[in-house]
Image (cartoon, rainbow over all chains, first blue to last red; front, side, top):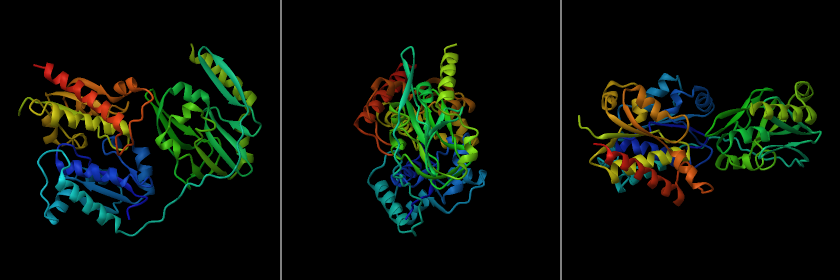
Length: 285
Length: 130
């Protein structure tokens, strides 16, 4: 079964075989454990996709013999675990593809055959996000600037970095996220890229990113440790960060490795609240 | 080489707005303006292949981008295409605030509505072009 794979399709659009390539990739990514790589964006976003390709077995799907996806994988020095060429598959299964760009009956049959073939392959172990049972109760202080209201948790267990990320520490665990300052600045958040479950994160290391039509913001972890769970709801509903970045919109839970040391470089509510005010006033010019 | 307008969407994979860009381009070249427009594969174009570059260079192009990275607009322009319009899916999406458009793999009914609106917008531009 193709699970926990990185899928790199040619995603071609000017030939039926390319459309099939994209379609198969999308079908495979209905299984949320698979990650898709955009062949166009990969050329400008090395860091994001190198990480995905490095952490998963790679399935390359080419539509036609031009093999754009394979060439891209070669350029990026990626190790290919499995490779499919749609035109060859069509030939092998005696299926004639239409000359247009729509998926019709023949194309549907080929997609089904290829997906069935892929799903017969050996299952791979996957890493599963398990939300912990830790309890997080927030007590807020607010600050208003014009029509914008900024809430900041004042619990003593909540720590901040100057990158506007928070960590709510309970025992050996921290739940992390961004503050109201980030979500207000970004406005409508459209995309969330979570960190990998099991990833070892350094303090101030990247722990995913969020993006709105205004900007892409890398999330800077206030703490070091291992990612044990992510807020999977955010993948499809990143706007929950706008609704409440502390409760609904938390990002990940991290098993702490050296919080006593991390703490020295973090600030508590009082200092962050003052910092936030300065930032808000500063951003007003 | 014919003078069809090239409608080039971003690759549109992995994000719902990208899927909408791609679907809007297909709707235009297959259903609305098959005689006056055609699409070119952006994933192929970014490989720098000479043959595909020739399909773009000096031709009128309409790009359709799903996110602010503007992959289609940038790459078509770099390849020498004459970008007569940069369509941003988000501009139309903003007119439908609060709606759910679907997932990166499947559009919902509201997603289809936006796709049709964008395709109609592109078709209008093509039809008004001499």
